[in-house]
Length: 284
Image (cartoon, rainbow, N blue to C red; front, side, top):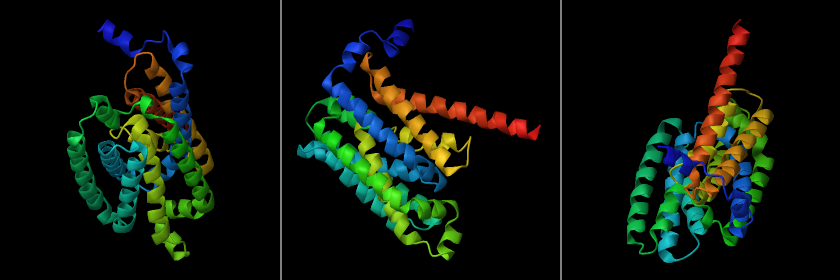
């Protein structure tokens, strides 16, 4: 047991590893992903789209597996698969009662096809494993530029539609009555989430995408209802999880996803404790 703990938390040599070019690229990718995921997470939670994010991750995994089989960039394949999922969820799952069934169907299809494509791939097993659990080695210059481009695209789009999107997320019926284009915003937001999810898959893996796209939003919902403050705190939590998880995973040489998920979950527990303490104080 002691040996396992030492393996999980080995810090010797981390400074030397931070000087390597691929590690610096991974840290930049983690920071960019933390920014865009942190901004989207409160809206994802407010709109009840946690399950949709999971389904989108499976289609991003399928696209990445197809790209791996074809010998092209995994990031491009993941983006393509995730955008398809986002459009499907946005267009076919507009009604709340239809959303879960649509997501379940697409999720099962994506996971099955993705596993089949990985089985057909004859390359290194580490490449296959990385799609599920994430790998900082997968962040090359091409993926970094793609991540930067998508970050600018997502944040720029949110800057334009944030107010009506927030209104539609808080009270969709009233927003529709006030003329907010719900049918346009739903697929648009689904595509933005899909792009972010696709870029998170190579870093944290398809299994634990929820740790950066949902947990920060769920955590800040326990401590504040102010949209701006919630967004800022969500970004902080996402950055702590992603950048901190990347640094912690360097020396042990283990998948980043476990560290990212653990840090995000600890932040959630802290926010939950703060929210409970504030509620008890108000009650008293």
